[in-house]
Image 1 (cartoon, rainbow, N blue to C red):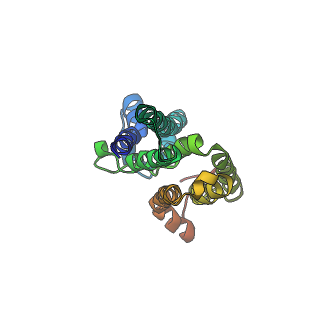
Image 2 (image 1 turned 30 degrees about the horizontal axis):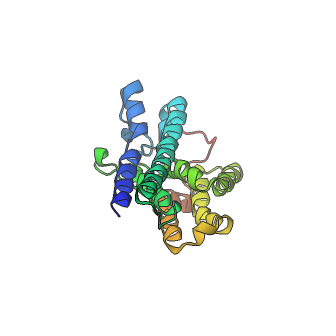
Image 3 (image 1 turned 90 degrees about the vertical axis):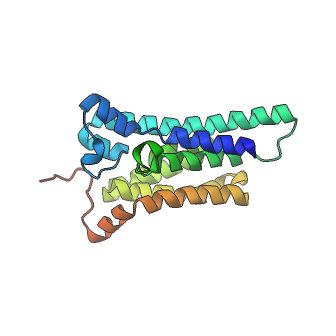
Length: 212
């Protein structure tokens, strides 16, 4: 139990590193929260600087991946020390993904106002369930190409992930793991509530659309 607490806490702290905010502050001397959607994620950062947007995407995904890998090694180390591992390593890895996303969405450093968690979840689950992530990424790309909504692509890709993991990985049939994965996806979808409202109203920004 103490190991799971350490994994949750370390994953939250990793996830809470606000790379989008830091990059824009360091390289442009601006507060990204004061422009565009006010979000610290890659999409909003790219409106300020496409290069910084790509860097934000990569770094946000990387912190999620590190959280998942760190949880795995901590869990294995604990098992080697005690001589037994009673819980699948996918439990602590999925827990790490959840808390990394929580850290990104609710970073303590920015008064708990962060991003939407898509890139961080991508990085985390790429370690846990890479095939599911690849299919979800294909869904994202397909939706963006057809409808030209990045937010809709993100929502549908994230929403599909628990189903994909359940179908492709036997360990995802474990009730606790499925609950953690589903909770992570739901958190991200809920964080897109404003985008959903704008999509339904027809006012959401489309890829390639010109702004006045």
